[in-house]
Length: 141
Length: 190
Image (cartoon, rainbow over all chains, first blue to last red; front, side, top):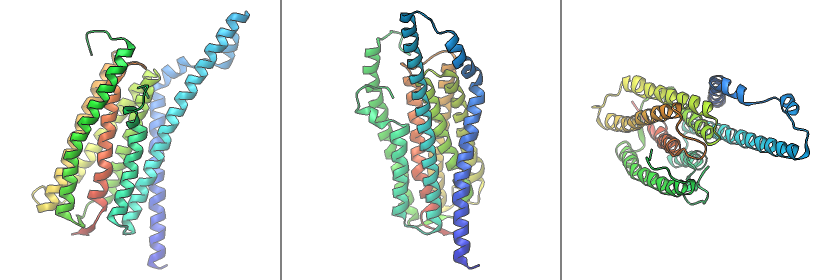
């Protein structure tokens, strides 16, 4: 096995380990926060059977109940989407960090490394720091 | 917290000014960190000291993960998910402490000392100034956590949480540039 093959195997191993480590850490943190929040989440989420059982029968009340149920579902969907965005951003940042690390081993130029850092900073500025809220109306994010 | 209760419209108007003020603060901080980066490239050029690459990667992953948990905490309070907000704040503070242990407890115990010429001066200057910001961020997070535990903040009013989260992400952005500048760019000089 020559040096080039060894280098390629080492590079692949580093990418896999970095990504794997990042994903494992993210999953562990996710599970930890779930465990910590378990009581409130369990208390706050009624089952479908309970919701059906509690459904009022009169037309007006039923319409109101459906409206509230839909609003609650919408709220849940928005929350899930927000958390999912956070996971995607973490994965991208992990991937770019791995690329940066491997680029260093391959002797990629300082300018290229700086460009990767700029992309990472841009992702954090947009998705985590909400820089666009400075000039967008509406305020909240 | 203001003693005078404001309407939601007034609060949102004030929020715009608060955000602008915070970003001006970041701009002033950017001069400090850019100065440190400039010093690194001026004094080190296309070289760097022989540092522990594994440690650099680990502390970077820890800080990125802490930004993720901070984002979860902020998302939690935006959606009135208080339990998740509080638990993720604690995890973020814990990761911040782990980062500090990695830098101060391990990197600073390596073979390079602050008095070792340009390498020592720049390495300790950059990592020290950044670590100070991480430490202040951890204190900030713990204050916000304590306020949250006492019932402060809601989905509509959570400027304190937003400011804390943005500050923490800013510290992360600084490391995004410091990590390659310290650990990756240039060739190693033994």
